Length: 332
Ligand code: 13P
Ligand code: SF4
Image (cartoon, rainbow, N blue to C red; front, side, top):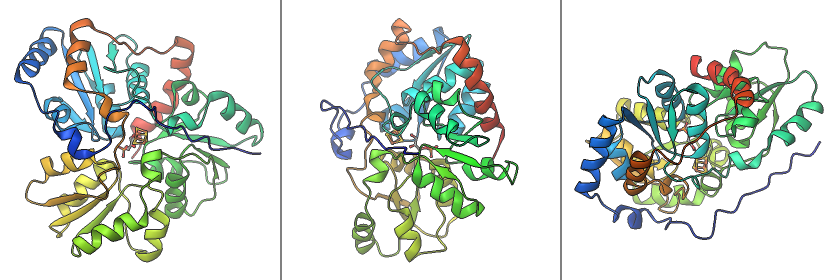
């Protein structure tokens, strides 16, 4: 059966995708002071993804990858969760915490990868593959998760697939590049939804080669969502791919002093913060997720003042989506 990939063109009116333009937004001390005061008064926690703007990462209570953020959301004692990330991440927090107020400071912060599959399309795919176990990447909507048996992130996708009964057919959605990474590691065949993230898909082997010419001793840190990963692995078969959190651990352990960071540009901020004595070079200044960059100090402050915009999930979907999410949080 066909599972057409419908690329979602990012909205025309988006913030500038150039890293340097993003940095000029800077911090405003009065804004930061009020955010700090309100987060205390309202018992709020600010959770930020590794791709967030530098000034947002700087004020967050926790900065991490999708798996770490889900675990923080599951464990927090705060009454209010301000999610500095994209919509599916806030939804996951809301599914784990139905009694807390989950805020996404800009509701336009979506995800082109999550938009490549709908619950109806997944139901049809399942009908055409009876008996298949459905593993979906966390980058999906709540109603897609509700149709899934397991969720995973790039940090534990291999562990999740390895935990499944050996003879069960697996339907893996929606990222085809992450699926290829999982199949390489597990040696297991899977039926794969042909989705991709527009940022990672656009990173070309030529972008890596260009940076390697400037920094010949730099080690490559490549995310498994990248469209270029198979071509690069053909050149360097020993290379590992890393989730964003995996990149931090690798940079800490490696003997290299310079790294070419082959993922969204925000990751450079996180790496430079956690591993300050080493140098991190973005693979391309335009590998920038405009959805992630929609969250700013200004809209975080507005969210904390007004406790809006709130992300909620209808109870019937939440209950069904909770099971695959709980399995994901436990594994890997
Ligand atoms: P991780 O942080 O889980 O590696 O995911 C990357 C990503 O694209 C999130 O949208
Ligand atoms: Fe989605 Fe790609 Fe942006 Fe991650 S980087 S939030 S996968 S569009």
